[in-house]
Length: 317
Length: 295
Image (spheres, each protein chain N blue to C red):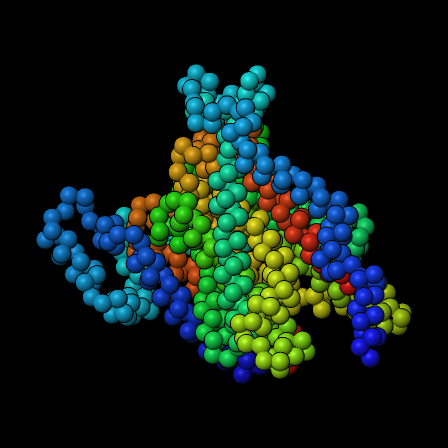
């Protein structure tokens, strides 16, 4: 087990460096001079040359990457061009809101996904299965940003029950777990939950179906086990894979929140990314993407290790 | 001896079983859900393709005095948008760009990813390691983040959207292609081809491609739904098509401000994305179960 964990961690190192390289290069595939973003439109040649040296753009690319990586490892992702504040603190503050949203969405999506998946797999090819699979297909096919709009139309515009945008009354920054704040969370969380709900349903349904068709289930039934006990075995066998899928989905929710956060003006990392793109705030863009990608990499690592810990079949292979 | 084999050859066509693809085709044709989806998609495709000849209103012609008409207004069956342009015409014309930007990246990624996966899987060794480890790096990004990061860096535009989405899907298709190819590589008929002196390229093209294409194709059709949602999502963020071009994602974006005035007209473009996406998903599912002959 320890060997597996060690090997898995060592394997992550080149991935992390490559991810950093991709984030670094993103700024350099930008058409035109990377300085364009920092430079005032009427800047003189001397100022341009000065800034080029100040930002280190005059050095060879590998050297620039080395310096950038060295600083990044020490928590310095540069300063946002738009606000002048350190990128890392901007990103971490926003990530907190995204985590709140993702966790709420995961609670909704995973609960319904597991329920629909188990029921559909257990009652395969009945009407219950058909209803559950239809919901799942709709969940994975719906453009979630559009679903967000539709929910706003129904619950904010027409019924006036829930707020349409923001993450708290009066635009206050601090999040709290009281009704005044949770009201703002409901619509974005439901919107975010539909895709993981659909994917978890489909995965668990397939898993349950597979496990139920295996010989050992037949043996358990032949032994005279009650159906509830058989069911417990099914859940035990489906758990490792289902957990891996859910972990991955959590990662997608954290990293892919830009569309939903834009629809609901939810002040998370996605909205930050959106403003970084449109203000051409390249350090902020780079830093946000790097932090989100690293979150995703480490979440994947955690999922793999957890899966190996609870599933003895993985260690053997 | 030769007389017997001649006779056997002549008899072969008469007793020939239906081919694999013919069986798959028949099974899909008998699947009602798949057929309905195929019909809906065909309808949307053809109307987008032949939009100029359908006698629709001009999708660019706006008017300040007839902005945001409701669904069912005479002459404007689906209402008008925030600039008074006919929604029906814009939705049908919008299919052109939306479908192009949604489907083309998957086609490109299918070609590139299949080639990469085939080479990685067949040649193996260092080339496999080089290709697959590079692919792993892209797996370190959630696909939405990767698409937006590349589009955000490249800037808005249709070509940039297609490029960024292609980059998102190449790794996924390559991984599937590689694993399918590795499965086929050591089968007896490939060994036989190698023993009879066929070169690597010939074996890949003649003997492997036909055997790996099916599963990769089904996987790729499943990606179209994601691609449609992402492509329209890029436009929705302002990273894809530019106004006044009709495109579903962009229409959804510009109509977002109108949800307090005329909400259901504002929601229409999203319904189109949803319809196309769900049809591709169901069709892909139908194909997958039709190709799984053993069941």
